[in-house]
Image (cartoon, rainbow, N blue to C red):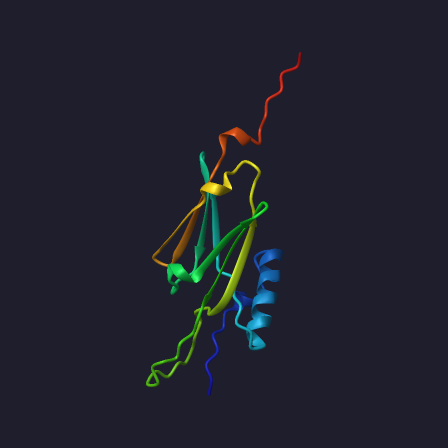
Length: 142
């Protein structure tokens, strides 16, 4: 007998993008793939943008963070190790495998000063704004 978690809301996506994400993520894992997409929060402050990725169970050395042109890409891998033979898993909901998330950076950031820290399963990227590259400009009529 197998136990399957049932959630009536599993079939009703909250948005089109979540439906697309779910389609690609679940179809890959069902077919033996090991790819997942971590949940992300993006926050804009007065002086910076903050990107927070929920990726528990990794070490800070497991991340690869790159800036190419105006794209920020965060990737890594969480490996499933079934070393303890006495454990008899009934359900595994934790996501394992490789991941990659890319973000388009606004023009008003200084990508050379991006700071990353990993604490309690959250990878926090701080992307400072560059005051010299203001997106908003006021033009006076002469």
